Length: 250
Length: 231
Image (tube, rainbow over all chains, first blue to last red; front, side, top):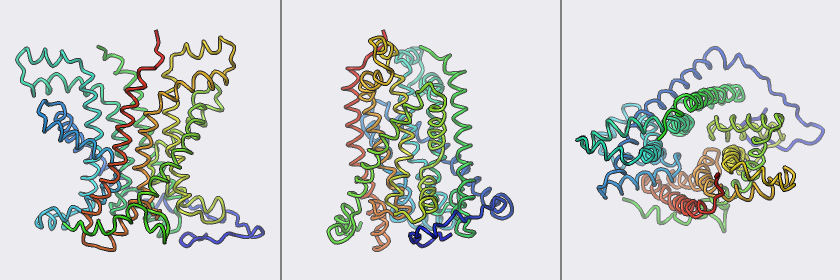
């Protein structure tokens, strides 16, 4: 089986049967299995870090867009519109290859000394996902009736307190399902960071493919892992929808 | 700031080396997206209708397809087709065709969900009334349900087209000469202006996608006036 160079079109007589030897033991045990496990850990790690940061950043941007202060509103709008309407892959390239030109030398040196690929991956995933999360949060906040804010301001809470103690706790309950599906998208999108050399599960699968020519097994395992993550998560969303969301009604 | 690198290569970003060499750049991105969305629409329509069907042998395959594809990252899907296609058809398939197939399969699953949701959003009385006037199930679908629900789905289709346009950038990983790949090439050739190049590319993607997004928002407002509603 010729993997690298383009295959020649075979003549009818010598039609090759699928002469590919499946060797599941190869990827399910030993060194390659260790690689895949490491890859899963990196995928989960980069997704978890980016998710936490993008929840934080997304909330900030959403609140920025809700304030009555025009420049902040426009900044929030520009942020969400720009990062939602550009491909993640190019954003990753931008942060990875382009950021060194803008950042001061001290920070660059520090970044190169540490895990710069991981940092660039986290930054791009965070910025991309937070733009989507900001929109989800904003629509969640909009779905809370306006008199909630008015009432909480009337009992003497400040604007920030009203958001912190009244609006956001309610809004978060409504937007948990869309937030979970954003988290799922984030996990799937995290496969893109392999283009800059973060050793996530997909990178490891490619690595195994080029070391052993057993790409099928490696890709199957990687696909199954992604699938099981997303099936479990979508099951959780359905359960949540059934049990909790029905209780909220205005 | 070395934006002169960008200006010198701007025509390469727009259509590659087109008159002398292969078409590429932004033109290739748009062609890729347009062809894929056209094919994905029919795939998605078919699977969306199957998913709504009462017959289990139609519903379950569609469900498996949608769940499988939606649970896999697109990059993985592209690589699957890139490696699988030569084994299945026996000779190597060019990257461009591989990408189109992968994008169609991927987007088809999302469009199937849009179609399913769009049909379910229509009031039940529409179907009952159509069947009541003596149309068959197929006729009712063809002449009553789909014309209404497809029109309501147009904004979602446009949004899907936006994500598809963004997703075509992944084709660069297997070497299709679209906008992202052209940027990589220029960046690798010139070496001194990656930031300027990638900012330009981001803005080019943004202009296309933002126009489409605001178009779909306007459509949504217009269409919501004509929607059939439950009483």
